[in-house]
Image 1 (cartoon, rainbow, N blue to C red):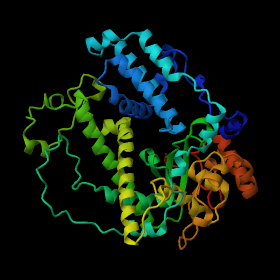
Image 2: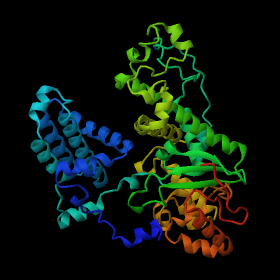
Image 3: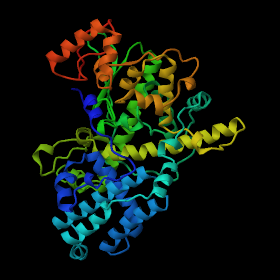
Image 4: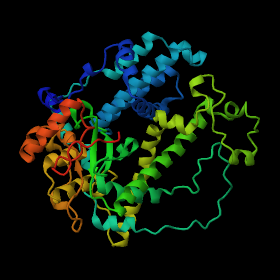
Length: 490
């Protein structure tokens, strides 16, 4: 039985009721079963959201500040300032933040005055406030049904006219003189020029209109090559694979018949995006981690940290003085690539910057054609490129199971009911020529039956290959007859 089949057996969770069973009833149990199980990127996201809410009350004594933060989130939801989805995320961040304070208190990492105010009992009481159940009355349930979900405020298409306007914005030459010279960076990244946000946005729109990834999925996407057919392959980590919402943890996209221009679009954004994140991540590490301070980096090198010439002409980004032997002589780039945590935190901030730039350019576009924005739901978002890509795939007569497999859905109902319509597909774009792998389709509900109907003879070969290799998502490419068991360089 596949993961997709298992999901169908499980009763769906009622979204209108917060299940306190999702969280252990005691803080100590939360520390054991939830806190230590969170992925690093999730921890960074929760910490950021917790600090946003906590900062309003940080001037108060610690116990009062934590209690006020919890109460504020609940009050804002009760006053309809937060959608239910946002409230749930904030509640999860509150639980994480409270647990973080407990961990710091347990390790004696807090100021003496703050530490004296806390105890396991006090923090557990605040934790209980955060996980308390919300009981909805009939009136509240009716009001909840009328609240707009977050997705309803996103345009589920990307105007072709705006696309042409955006991608044809000419590159401007930087003629103004900087107000003051920037300090010499501690690490030379060997990148000649800064990446302007508008250029990164143009690259994103051109690239994502081809493959329709969720914006955050570019963070862990990788490019591969099919050994036999030489097709370009994208391996994408599904951003919504919890609770059976996606076709597995990863999906593999076969970019067959991709031309040189399309390849350049994908590679430009991928490279610029990774470079931007690496810069931001390294800046974050230097500012927030004592390990990456000038003293620790240059203590044994005999280089003065204010010697600009030496800093820019030799590879000084070696962590040779760290006490952990396995980290000696490890570059910052290598550490970031191996862990990826700073990029995960920076990616969210970078995507927000891209989104703000997109809003700005859309307003300029409307002005250029003599229109004004009358409805906020018509304003495109980064995610709208995904909607448009799916609409183009529908217009290109892709089968529903192919679309679900390509875009990371566990069911064909998702793209049918919640994504761009076939009628909104762009004219002049022709057929949608990219496809998912057979294994990506197998992870979609009903995918097995679809493949049997579509290519019964070939599917028998695939099924045999899967049984022999005992792997999923990493064995074959497309499910048509032009390729059989193609090894991927994974």
